[in-house]
Length: 222
Image 1 (cartoon, rainbow, N blue to C red):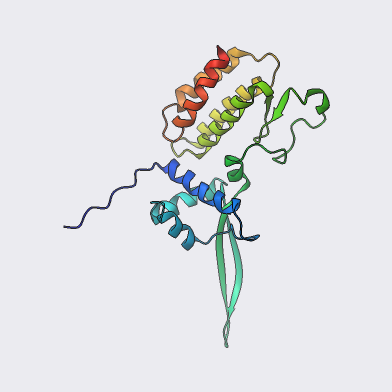
Image 2 (cartoon, rainbow, N blue to C red):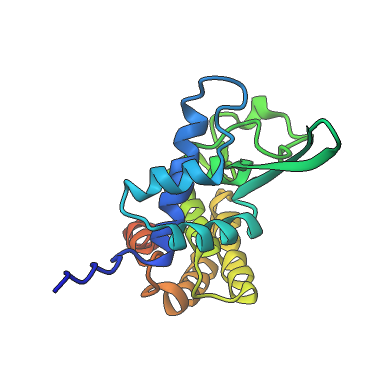
């Protein structure tokens, strides 16, 4: 009797992050200007070697495209025979700016500088701009970056509705806005954190990052 094939143990969010990391690695190690743009046959073949079956790749790739983490590029061309021209198209896939920002450290080239018009010479030792267009005091840098990763995981989750994702991201931004102040209002931070704790602390794919942020928040609140 043939052995039953083992079921994939990864959650949907873990599969999405694995796919996104695969595209990130292709972008990070280019062989040419378009070598990071990959066809579906290669994507499925490479990810199968990592234990992810085609059906999981296809459905989660669709999700990543719809949520702007991955770009689908379609190039139309023609196959010319003796008698006719047959239209064809080539589809390739590659990581988007949002996907790159998910893995990379914050960059000054990300989006619009929120401190435009501020004399940075006066505050250069006090604030740092994060990649998600927020800024925090230098002493709160680690917490601010961790909150950014927390927000990314919330946006990737399949267990939250779009409205919930927006609500929770708003709470994260509220905390970050306090971290930019000389004297943050810890009451506001605690209120937003309690909302996040109640809503996402135990959700698969988010819990790991939540547990990274929690001790930082606890230490900050004292």
